[in-house]
Image (cartoon, rainbow, N blue to C red; front, side):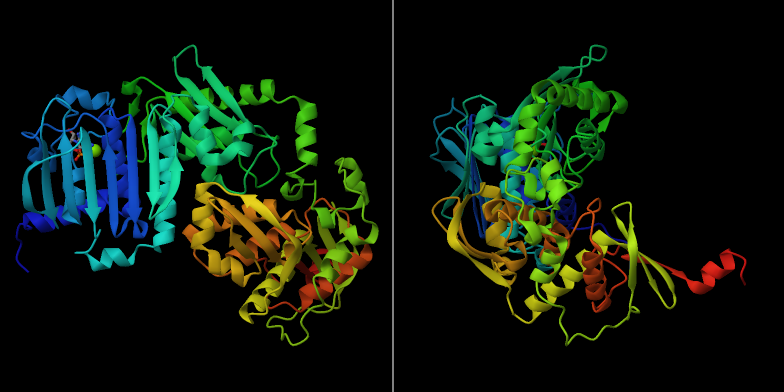
Length: 587
Ligand code: ADP
Ligand code: MG
């Protein structure tokens, strides 16, 4: 092939790929433009997950009619005027790429009017080509409609998820900007449904309430701290240690109110909670770092999601210390204890243990207020109660019959067989047993659903509603029966049988967290099974009776793959007779 210059349209479509990956990228750019325009009201309306249509309306500065055509040129921006300005960017936008990029891959109309002008102006594009412009009556501000996203790029379309999943991402994005800009009234409508609304009062707590609901908002601590040397400041909210979630998606960071993703900040936040949260539980936080514009390079990612810091160590320590001191000073111990005993205990993991697996000793030690339920509380009840192993199952990689010798460090079972010694990780082994059972039954549509005596109402955040609706069928396959019950409320009528001893509302929230997170990453059918298995499995640190250990090993022996847990970690280590004899010099 001969070398040729790309046509401007094709070049624009290729360039657009960097900025516009999916509907949420469009919403991000448009909302950032509205914020930069000084808006006090920003409305986002989407249809079909934003693929059919995205409409963003603001009451900001508007664009003078004379300049509007220029806004759709590449590298056209009103936000940078000299090369030095790139070293200290104070606006969210600066690349001048968003509008032309979006226009290249959609049908787009922008209508705008500065307050001072009497008449508005519109300009319209289809797949990057101008198709009309002129005067049009309009309220002050700007409104952008983006329709049929990637209609000209079917390959790109294919990478999009379901409308509900795309809507979930958009909700998430708008929610995060709403948290950072309490003075702006945000509204998000997903189809006919209002998914989020903040009052724009300027009070930090208001968006927190709108995004996460009253229960979470009440459990959040104000964070405020500064590093005296650099002047770096941290402001925002972080959850009290009694409040936590099953994944990291509730941690939000802003740099000078720009939402960014950054592993270092995630580490700093987790470090601040060191020793305060159960294993595999994560805080909720919305934190803004205020740095001199010159100390952060925002021009390192096409979608401006990532930034580079001049003094990374200082940023880390400022954030970590500010949060830590908020936690230490604001969380008196007795209250923490009370919270743990109460609502959050069932999923708090670590050595607190689960309701129906908890030994009486643990129950006493953790101050559980429920009566110790005797035999029902023991591991064997949990294992047997979930049903006997499926006799029809043919093991693929058989384990020999194992004889229990004992338990080591309350974590490993020592067992022997004719071919040597086995060390079994009790949690991993139990996860494997439960996982196989759940998957098998789901596959056979033999739903192990347990109807509740009376339905339990749960109040969800709009984000959780989006997750639930996106995975509704999936949740049903695993035994959930859920009924919409006005606005953001649902009735739980039945739960997966394996979760029957849990608080139905709390366990649903956890499952939604896991599905939301893993669902985006993998979309595999066993996610729920794996998460339910993991949550229901006996923990390390719990003592087991010999009968319980025997029962567990018998069930492990007949699973499809007894050698690994659903996450791929080994369930057991084999010390062969030959190996032992050789090590002891007997061979
Ligand atoms: P950037 O935001 O990087 O400058 P964009 O392509 O997003 O580039 O926008 C180009 C220009 O159009 C902006 O610099 C701004 O002047 C104008 N503009 C875009 N959206 C709006 C809006 N909602 N209100 C006012 N002006 C806008
Ligand atoms: Mg922009």
